[in-house]
Structure formats: structure tokens, C-alpha cells
Picture 1 (cartoon, rainbow, N blue to C red):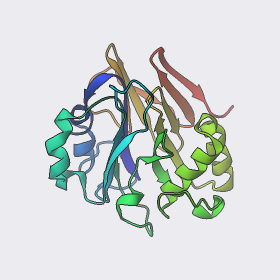
Picture 2: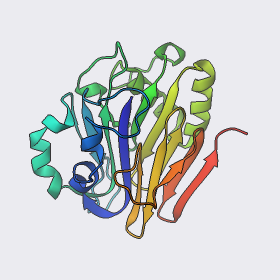
Picture 3: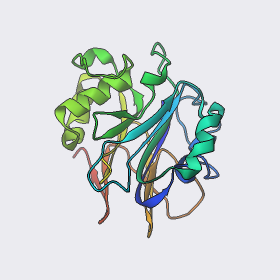
Length: 233
């Protein structure tokens, strides 16, 4: 399992999303408030973001590590000056038996999209993907989502869940233009402000404007607003 967060809106520092909130991703790495499975997220972490100043659509850039986020002093020193309008970051609690190395840390990418998976899935129900960045379940799932197309992520999650009913498949994705979220076995919450929208495994503060997304729902965030629809029924 893991904790993750995404931002879409006015450019802001990566530190303001990942490190600075009182109950943000840094604190969630060692003291999450709403995590249902696991108590610490120390098996690596990563962040991806887009160049807001590029005149052309550019691929995301990433910083990933197999160390706990609290031990990455180099990132802490540069995060305040890294700015972006679209950010996705995650801290990891590895599924038992999965590798613990940098390549297994989200976010994963196909060169356009960033994806983070909070959960677990039986890799045996997924087709082998040579393009997967790691042998871990989350990386193989990410490669499967990318291969079928992120626009079909809701359908893909339903298909994977039918093949592995015990899977937890909560996802966060962004292409720098929108955020897509899927709740399947774990929660997401969003905070919509005049400056932009944050989506997270758990609120980074006690602002009453945070809205919890129900399980088995599909979240879409664009500059026009937020929509939430049921995945079933």
C-alpha cells in the first residue's frame, strides 16, 4: 500500500505539495492518519511533474528513490525551487515479496502520463509487459493501464478486479492537463480551491472543504472543475 497526492492548478513549489503540509505526504510516510493497511510507508517514494514554462507539451520529469522520503535530504534542498502546475507524488509500503528499489517506486510513466497505484494485485492476472518499469505488481499494472489507454482506466480496473477479486486498485493519474482517480478498496479525497485542486489518499490538513470520494468511483479533475461518477451500477 502507499499514500499519494496530485495537484492541478496554478504553478506552485513541489515542496508545498509534498513536504510542507502539516499532515502531508512527508508525515504520512511515518504517521498516516487514515491508512487501512500498513502503518508506515518507508519502502521508497517518488514525485513526477511537468514543466509549466515549456511552450510545447513536454514529458514529465521524475525524482524517485528507494529510501524513505524523510531520508532524502537532497530532494528537500531543491524541492522549494521546483515549480509546476501538475504534480503527482507517492510514498510506498511495498507489497510482501515485491522488490524494493528505485524502479519500483511510483509514479510510473509512459512518457506522457504519470500513474501511482495504492493497493495490491496478483500479477498472474495481468499480461506480461516488457515495458513495465519493474517486476513489482504496481509497475506491471501501470504498464497494463498505459497499454490499454489511460482514457479506458475505469474499464481496465473493472476487468482486473473481475480477474482478481481480492485486488486493491486505487489509482491516481495525470497527463499535466487533468487528474484521473479511481477508488477501489481505498479512499481518495479532493480539495478544490480557486488556485487549483489537490487529490490525496488522505487530507493534508483539517480544512473542512476536503471531500471524500466514495469507494468504486471515478474522479476527473480538469481546469473546468471536478466530477465524480460511480464505477458500478
